[in-house]
Image (tube, rainbow, N blue to C red; front, side):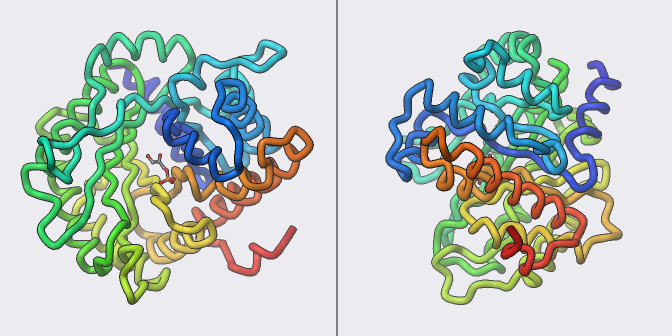
Length: 340
Ligand code: 13P
């Protein structure tokens, strides 16, 4: 394991005041996003969209890395620059989603396991050549009165840990993403209980696999009310529960906790991150963002698939990136949303 290179990658990813742009939507997911603006999901449209995002002027001010999908890591602009090269030229680290999505844990089961181990070490050789320096693997858990099951938490944790070990051995930094979904009417207390159990299982498995905690990034959900819960917790309540949960479960050696947005509104995801950082000045980790929808949604809408709107799409992305950068320092204020 080339520890020096992994350290440099982690340090760049978790630079203060910056976060990650998750632009690693699989073909199925990006089709859903494009459907929302009435755009066909062709390879060219996907390339044009990602090119619009990555060529945003000043993106590197608040974005330290971008998570790409396999197809995107291989794409180039019309003038022959690779999309990964565009990011590298700005000092932004390209990363790669390596899991291959989820399957039912057993026929008929509502619980899921993540696939993607076949040929993983070999795939990394190519991804490294293409410029990727970190990777992402997502495990997903839904909450009900009796789920997730102990077995599902154990198997997903083992998968995340095995992936993290292979990734470090291949010279890339693993982003370990256990996502407890917001779907459902559960309370924030129930989310805290489940997230605590999930993280305990994940860190036990990481220890068993011998994963170097200093050389990984955790990408978790915030502790938050279920989407359909009648009483929605405030940003301050989300911050208090989230910081308590991580203090109890995440070793201090982990350098960065970079949250997913998971279906929160874009301003909501920023306000929650800000509240977390205002609370947690004395904590060992960098609390930052690795948002997909919460960074991209306004930009996708402003762009609408039209060349004439590229500048508007980039402006919308840069606004969210900078506001989330401010939230990383605990300096976000809602009134900044109104500024141009
Ligand atoms: P969201 O921020 O849209 O949840 O996406 C982050 C991600 O990478 C999910 O795997």
